[in-house]
Image 1 (tube, helix red, strand yellow):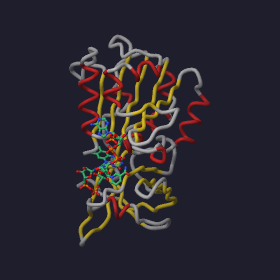
Image 2: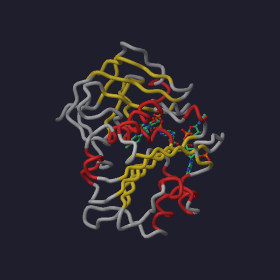
Image 3: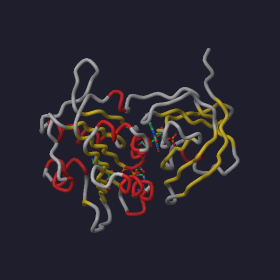
Length: 248
Ligand SMILES: Cc1cc2nc3c(=O)[nH]c(=O)nc-3n(C[C@H](O)[C@H](O)[C@H](O)COP(=O)(O)OP(=O)(O)OC[C@H]3O[C@@H](n4cnc5c(N)ncnc54)[C@H](O)[C@@H]3O)c2cc1C
Ligand SMILES: NC(=O)c1ccc[n+]([C@@H]2O[C@H](COP(=O)([O-])OP(=O)(O)OC[C@H]3O[C@@H](n4cnc5c(N)ncnc54)[C@H](OP(=O)(O)O)[C@@H]3O)[C@@H](O)[C@H]2O)c1
């Protein structure tokens, strides 16, 4: 039987807020594609409890990075958020997942749309050369409740500095306001045209592909709003313009 877990060592822990953290982990896992996830696990009552987590680093970066939220009532995430540098964690050696550019059909514009920790896989994709080889414009949309939860701003600023004409970052805030962020939720801003206006780009089915990640009801509601614009769910056998991954 294939090995289920390998040992990883925490080399860095980033505390963005009380409940949002990143862990950087040294572990020997199989090669992955940007956008994929693997499982992290910890022994709880004598058994390893594992959950999937998207990989944030680029595939050629030897240190794995994961970005997660502490769900107080959950079994694993509060324990992940208590881990310290030097401690050991179990990592599944075989990454998985289809939220990858290999699965995206040809398009001119790429939209990467995330709520909360759904940002992670898009950061990995944006650190690779492929989006810049394949798309004329790339728009990253990140929705969070508060300014403090709009994380990874420095990494995003580096991408913007490298691709100033082709990359746009559009943050959303739902429970605070800031002049640089759109207010409210993503699906409504697709319906009322505010997101397209901010990006100066249309959701044109002949030109764009949209990747959605994070909160399942955002993914459902955004898919419905995009369907009203003629964008369909992408399937290998029936190509469309919307790919998605939900976290619960
Ligand atoms: C393919 C995939 C990739 C994932 N990648 C990530 C990731 O990169 N980062 C991450 O934080 N989580 C990610 N998740 C969710 C993660 O696997 C766990 O479910 C989460 O960390 C909570 O674990 P838990 O054991 O504490 O509670 P669980 O028993 O797993 O979940 C309890 C409840 O917490 C809520 N919840 C779960 N995940 C989140 C979340 N991310 N943000 C807010 N509320 C949540 C849901 O209501 C869920 O029913 C991913 C899930 C899937 C399916
Ligand atoms: N953020 C916190 O301070 C906090 C604290 C303690 C516990 N939690 C718990 O953690 C869990 C996740 O919180 P989170 O803030 O990381 O993730 P989240 O609830 O998915 O919220 C992230 C962003 O997505 C938006 N969103 C939620 N549902 C949506 C939908 N159907 N369509 C479009 N956008 C949607 C939120 O807007 P809205 O604000 O409008 O929902 C917010 O801007 C929740 O169960 C929450 O109770 C959060």
